[in-house]
Amino acid sequence: TWSDDRILVPNEAQHNVMSVSLLREQRSGDILVFYLRKNDPNDDCLLYVRRSTDELQSVGEPVLATPIPGYQVVNNDRVIQLTGGRLLVAAAHHTNAEGKFSGRGVPVSYYSDDEGRSWKAGEPVFPLRQTPPSYVQEPGLVELQDGRVWMFMRTGHGCQYGCYSSDRGHTWTTPEPIEALASPRSPATIERIPWNGGLLCLWNDHTGWHNHPPDPRRSPLAMTISNDEGATWAASRVLDGEWKGSYCYMSLTFLDDRALISYYGPGGMKVLSLSKDWVLMQSPIHR
Image (cartoon, rainbow, N blue to C red; front, side):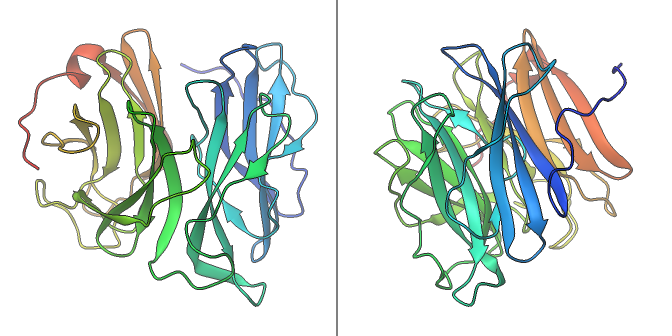
């Protein structure tokens, strides 16, 4: 059950505000509310953050988190905090050399070392305002146990792509296909499981392990687990999926002995609660 909704951030943009990420800052305990402020559907969409010191009863003034101008895409549930406290977010910069929107995004990282009060840009994965060689969009991040950061992103090439940073999100390797995570042109969500240290991935599984419609249909919604930092993945399990439906834009939160997943599906937003035992159920490694 859920309480009635209330406005936390008004529509302060010329178009809308959207794509929220919530993060509890490790040191202060404050809740940071990240959202896109979309002023123009073609060339002005940037990420802002507000701080709450009273458990979301109120929020402070907005701070720009993506200081490079242009159209930036940051999905919901995309901001992470690294060991040591750095806040890190990956955006897809979609403004081309002519100042217009391009479907081919350039992943760019942004980071803050003062609890979100100021932000700097890392090096883009591809040169800004040039057409990247790969069709990539909607990147996400997860910190690996060896200290590297793994950036994963949706593509139009039949699977998720990934690249790595060894300097806490400032520079990145060249993206390469993650063939084990075959998918349509849709985003994935990968997060660390607090119960056993593995990685849990939510995505539209088009590996052939389950029946699925042809690209671009975003179905089924599946989950898989890796216990070796993404080198191999267990056989996936379907969470939701119909041949005519699309399921995407997931969030993942671990609370006590439950994994709470929100996602967009037929009819609107859905919330799914999975038990710890079900999540950790052993599945064979098949790729």
